[in-house]
Length: 509
Image 1 (cartoon, rainbow, N blue to C red):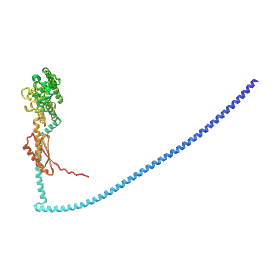
Image 2: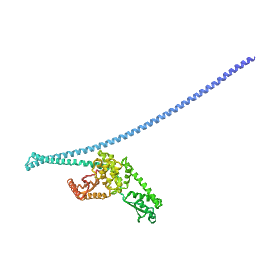
Image 3: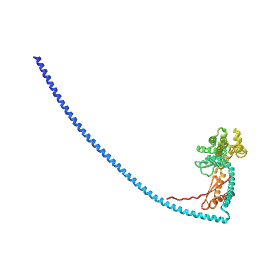
Image 4: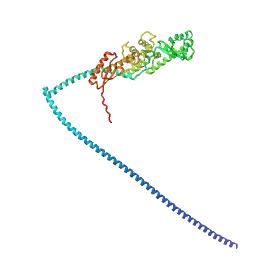
């Protein structure tokens, strides 16, 4: 009985479970169908919204495209209108030009007709004149032509002879011209400073009280300084200054340096003076050596004896006619080297001889003889080459030049000394000569301006074209040459150039 009950309960439970599961499954299916319907509805709504948005976007794009097309059409219409206006303007301009050309053609045609009439009249007049000339001269046209050609032939022969003469003269001057070109090129490529030094040096003092300290008790300080340096000290009424006077520039430099050191130190007494003079001598010797080495470096000269380098340095304080001898020697070396290079000679030899050509001036106040012989002896002593010694011996004509380099050194020496302003004695005469040249040119009637150039070797004269014609300008040039030759003293020759210029100026408005 229990089993039956258990089986019945099991069957009932199974049936209840099946019913419960069926009811649950049906509920889930219903809810799923409901969700599916909602999803489909939402999808339909979303699709409809997107369709409407796409339609609106398409409508906006169509509107923008229509607006852009209208704008482009409007711009094209404006451009076409502008081009049309320009074409109309060009047509009007072409019409005006055509009318102007037609008027000009008419004028030209009228002028051609007039010219043709004049030409025919002139031909007739010329024929009458020729007939009259033949009647008056008693010659036919052929005879007159033959006579004219004969005269022209004589003139041409004369001009040819003059031309041959000029060519010969030009050939003779060609060598001189080439020499002037070489020298002028060398001068232009080398420029040097010229220093005019006097025989006195001025030392500035901090105050006038220092003068008494320099003199010392009973003058012992100044006597000591003068004895040690060999230079005279001039202490006068010049405020805050002492003048050192002496003809030996190196001694004067030693005295100047020693005095400046004493003033700076403040202790001035005989023992201190002796110490400072000794220091100044060493300093000047060092400066001499440096100046000599610098000169050899500037000119590119190597292998000089140390004593020759010292002598070159001494030339730094040596002057000749106000021209610094060391600067002069460096310039001569450069000029001689440049000219030697132009002429195919030995530029190194020319520079070496140019640098040493005045070496005798470093000690000519201490030795007998002129600076040329002293320089030759010094170079022999320090074993310079025979070519260099020959250049030194020949640079003032004491010995005949046998080499090209010797001639170039002598020429470079003359060029350096003759530079305007290089020497005090020649500067004044040089300026007076230039002024006199311009005064002579200005004194002629019709001369507007005159300029002395090329260091006085040429004068250019501007004449007034309305007062002096071409033929008159030749006469003016000859007259000026005669005046210069009779009234001036000058080296070489002076070229006179008369310039006549006519300018026609107008303004286009």
